[in-house]
Image 1 (cartoon, rainbow, N blue to C red):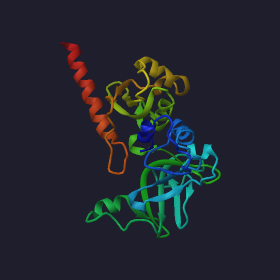
Image 2 (spheres, rainbow, N blue to C red):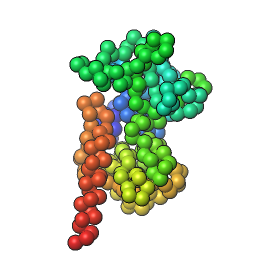
Image 3 (cartoon, rainbow, N blue to C red):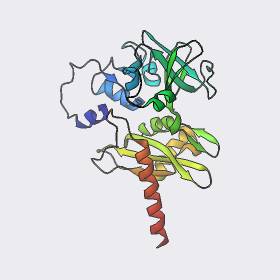
Image 4 (spheres, helix red, strand yellow):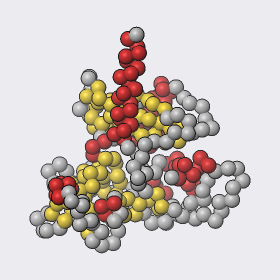
Amino acid sequence: MFSAELELIEPGMDLSTLRTGIAAGAPVSRKLMVDLREVLNLDEVTITYGMTETSPASFMTFTDDPIEKRLSTVGKILPHMQAKIIDANGEIVPTGSRGELCVAGFALQKGYWQNPEKTAEVMQRDAAGVLWMHTGDEAMFDDEGYCRITGRIKDIIIRGGENIHPLEIEERLAQHPSVLQASVFGIEDSRYGETVGAFIQQHKTTERPSTEKLREFVRQTLGWHKAPLHVFWLRPGEDFPKTGSGKIKKHVLKEMGTEMIKRNRQLAKL
């Protein structure tokens, strides 16, 4: 929503009365945070994390948190809630290590309506009887208790046996002056298993860079293996397919990208 609002800002608009806002539903890039402060005047913007199943917020930054904390984390666990990060075996990981984020507390839902199988899959009690919601999000805690979301576990790209996290590529792409927003996902590949694909929404006032220049921009900080092999641009005025809560439907983008690659290969044979 903030990205869309920034596109509609006209020169001379008085935004001096704005002070704060809440950003949630998707990671906030460094560029977007800078724009929120410098263009929309939201010096006290806060970052919130949660899900419908947790009513919905479970983490939040404070308005006076350092900008770096609001850029890189979703804050600390809210009162009356608990959180832990576990590995594939259900064991709590050390501080600074990645794993699946689980939350517990009074804000948890009772379950999915008439779907006990799904409820049992994501809501599980530990040995002490505490009911935990398994979020499906990969995260890590720092030494101060701030939580950093590093991506959806199911969205991790496995290229040649190496885990690649889409979020860090999306954040790098968002730093390019021609990129308004980017969504990164895995594309099936016969050699590597998966390769990196990206759909990009272009700033309407900029020129579109070549695919190779965009790849080089990513390589400068993340390395050649994380540069998108497949780059797709949304049409002018087109938006990403999104859920009712505003989250990008990556599975739809993956299907679209796969179909476009298939069609281009067929045309190349003609």
